[in-house]
Length: 88
Image (cartoon, rainbow, N blue to C red; front, side, top):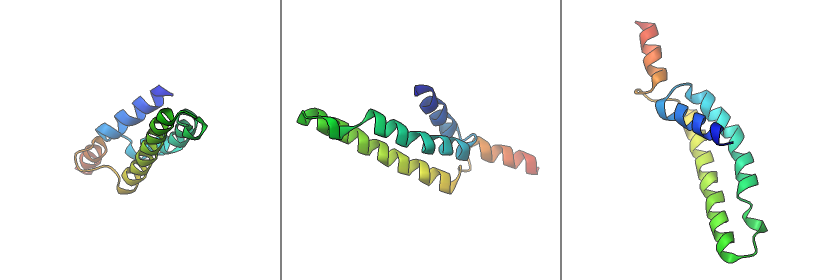
């Protein structure tokens, strides 16, 4: 589970295969969120709030992956550098 997050995050960070990495993270993030942060199953208020916070943090990261997928990599990404080299 952790390897997917590390690999996907690294690919997105450097801008290499960004849309594929976002697709991978987009498919994996709901699974990880709903299995790791089941805040509704905690009776202790402190644990409930902590897990709820982490759950909605993951929901916001899920939205960020959607945005990155939609706008594609930027000018400084490795994907853009590869495209520029192919054109010249």
